[in-house]
Image (cartoon, rainbow, N blue to C red; front, side, top):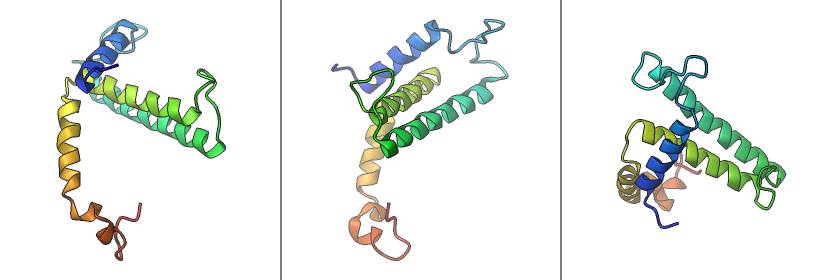
Length: 126
């Protein structure tokens, strides 16, 4: 696939705009740059949570996906969560690729991410 994360963000968001996911289904009005934008973004973020809930259920029950039956449900639902996240990032014109790169560097230097500190009392065990 050899696309950058930001290229995928743009491609996914543009496809979702074309599919009408960013317009009011009754009026056709765009849902960005309006007084409902905070609600819409909040709702779309919570839809990521629903994908993750479906992923854990698929993992817990070791289910195959019903839409892509050759794949595990956990794999497909995690992909759905990433797609939704990229769509939101595209709508908000975020540099998700840059943020991921910076966060990976930051996390690599965190003392609370080191095994010796995670096993201590009140450490991040998981």
